[in-house]
Image (tube, rainbow over all chains, first blue to last red; front, top):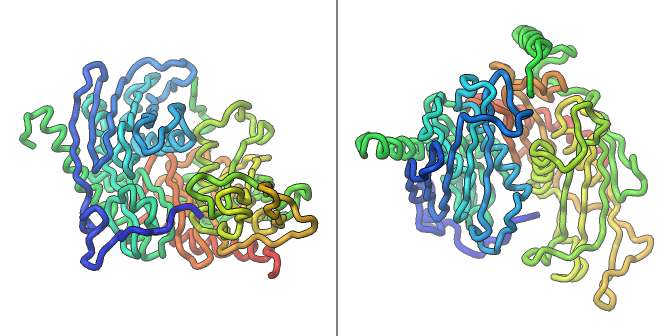
Length: 243
Length: 271
């Protein structure tokens, strides 16, 4: 059910993947903090061929008012893909997939943000996927964390994110679009390295209990790589490159 | 305006206090699920159906099977879709109208568990390649919500699919034509079972009931297949898990799921 037959070579005899990477090698990642004038905080990430822009507003008044909470601030996340971001045009209205991803990203960020300090307010995170190539939710989550930090919102830690998965019976780091379509499993992970806490975890695909444990660990190592790049992006904006 | 009541805080305090002693409000141990009951063929007009109760949570799933046009790149496979709906009579807080994010997540997690386990052999569900395939729709309705709708919907859909009878269509003059009285069993390859666990403080509990569900720090739903492999997973809730907790939840999902799988297996029609 689902998935297509693997016609391409996902992993060759030398352990090299379809895009030339090694099994434990992430794609090329570029993160930039700031960039938008009107948003309170923003970030741009290129994660392989993914291109994602994130803008953060708040803490600010909540509209509609009935959504506000007297005990705590609330976090609202909208993950949205542009119609031109994928092969075939995507209808601009939010799909069920986008609504679910918005929810899991929100719940991945909530443990990091000190929302209790801002009762009756909202922090809005707008994620715009300009180009998608597999693993957008992880790239989006990583960029959203940087944008929240850029907005000066107090946080316990930044949430780093990276997927692990399985192709050709091998556990790999950072699943790209082809590997997601033709591979055996995809496990996106969101992780706060400072607090050692997993805040986003999903899986589709079949793993043995041993592979499951290995997959989580490989993904966490990927998150640690992304975490360094997130810190570097903020350091570049605020301290001119020296981290 | 959302207001947290004193009662909510008291409930949490009580649940947490009992968990410190390894107990739960309804007398279960932390790793014990509620009693599951599965009533197959609850809706005889559907091609397959089941009513599932987990404690006081109740879900009905009906499976409808009908010819459908395939997706452009999936002309050699049948179609499968699973939905979930919260009926307004299931809880005082449910409002009518389009589904919100929690209900969309519920439907997608249940769908994913069945899909990713490769439960159904969809390659057998083709009437005419690239033109007409068999569509299998498993629609869940929540009748009473006392927590853990993920597992209730998942068991109901799986039970309804296991007991469903598949009609046969032939391709005649560019259209599917139903063959009377030709019913086959569903081509089933494996039985997926989801197990939902919650974390309250440092405690992991299996199958949270309604009161526990409301105060969970975080939850995780893990689906396993008949071989004991893990085939789908979803973390939810406004907090996270440590690596050790994730490992433990994986082990629990295999252990707890095996018992439910025996119940489901007993429903399966012989060859």
